[in-house]
Image (cartoon, rainbow, N blue to C red; front, side, top):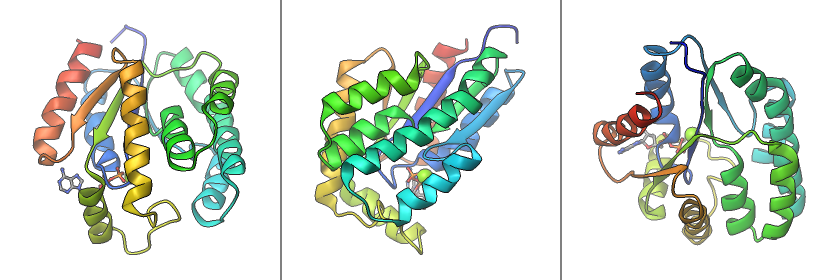
Length: 206
Ligand SMILES: Nc1ncnc2c1ncn2[C@@H]1O[C@H](COP(=O)(O)OP(=O)(O)O)[C@@H](O)[C@H]1O
Ligand SMILES: [Mg+2]
C-alpha cells in the first residue's frame, strides 16, 4: 500500500475492551499496510515503561500524575510515533492524550487548562486520525476487570464513581471532536464490536 500511514488510538475505561481488540486491529491493518506499529500508553519506550510502573503502582498527587503521563507521552511521540508516521507506517496505540483528559482531568480533577497546555506542547501536531472509544458502563467494566485481572493496578482498583467521571470526560471529548472519534458500544460481544471497528477502519483505509 502506498498511501501514508495513519495514527489510531484506542480509548475507554479499564475493562472496556481496548487490549482485546488491539491485535485484531493490527492484523486487519497488516493485511493492507506495509508496516504497522502497535504500542501503548503509558509506555511505548524504555523510559515510558519505567514511568508506567511508577504511574500504576506508586501513589502521587494528581498534578504530578498528569505531568508524568505527559512526560512519558513526549518520549513516546519523539521516539516512536512521529518517526513511524514519517516513514509511512500505521500506528495503533492503546491509549493516548484523551486518556489524560479522561483520567487525570475527569477522574482526578486536574484543571483542563493545564492539560490543554501539556497537550499542545507534548503532541506537537501528532494527533490520531481515528480514536476508537470503547464505551461501557463502569459496573460491567468492573465485573470484567475482576474476572480477568488477578492483580489490579492503582487505576483498576478505583471505584465505579471514579470511572463514571472518566467515562463522562471521554464522551465529552468525543462530542468536541466527533469527526475523529468512533464510539463503540462495548456491551456487545467482541465479534459485534469488531464489526463496528472494521467499518471505522474501512473509512480510514478504503
Ligand atoms: N465484548 C466483551 N464481552 C465480554 N468480555 C469482554 C469483552 N471484551 C473484553 N472482555 C474481557 O474483559 C476483560 C477486559 O478487557 P480488556 O480488553 O483487557 O480491557 P481494557 O484493555 O480496555 O482494560 C478481559 O478479561 C476481556 O477478556
Ligand atoms: Mg488494557
